[in-house]
Image 1 (cartoon, rainbow, N blue to C red):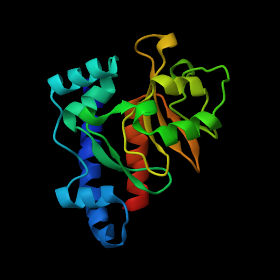
Image 2: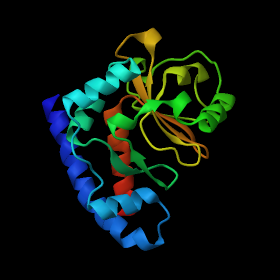
Image 3: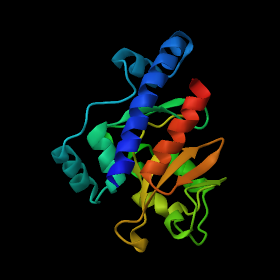
Length: 204
C-alpha cells in the first residue's frame, strides 16, 4: 500500500512538472480557466488538506471518503487535470465537494434523463476490470448519493459514487462526458493514473 502511494505521488509530481510547462505554452490560446490557474500557480497541484478538513467534509457529506482519495487530498487538496474530451478540469478542494444533486441541478437532470435502471454490478466485483466505458449511466438511482469532486464543464464532471447497498467501502469514480458517455473507474487511484498517463500523451 505504501509503495503504491509513493508511486502515485511521484507520478503526480512528474505530471505537474510536464503539464505545467505544456499549459504555459498553450495559455494564450486556451479558454480553459483551469489552464490559466495552473500557469498562475506554477503547478497543477495544491497544498495538502489537513486531517481535520477531510474529517469535516466527511461529517458534512455523511460518508467516509475512500482511503485512496483521502491519501490524494493529504498530498494535494485538488488539482488541475485534462479530461477525456480535451478540456481541462479542476478537481475541487475537499471543502468544496458536494452532492451532485445539489451542485448543478441542470447537469444532474441531464444525466438522470439519459440513464437506465439496469441491474448494476460494481467494477470491484468484476475481476480485472479497472475502467469501463458506457454510453449512458449504468443506474441513475446511484446519482442520488454521488458526490461531485470536480468543477462542471459542459454538464460533465467527476463523481465519487458510493454504493451503499454493496457495503460502506464500495465506491467508484465516474467521469461524465456528454459526448463520450460515462467512464467508470474501479477507484480513485485508477482514475488518477489513467487520466495522468493519457494527459501526458496528449499534452507533452
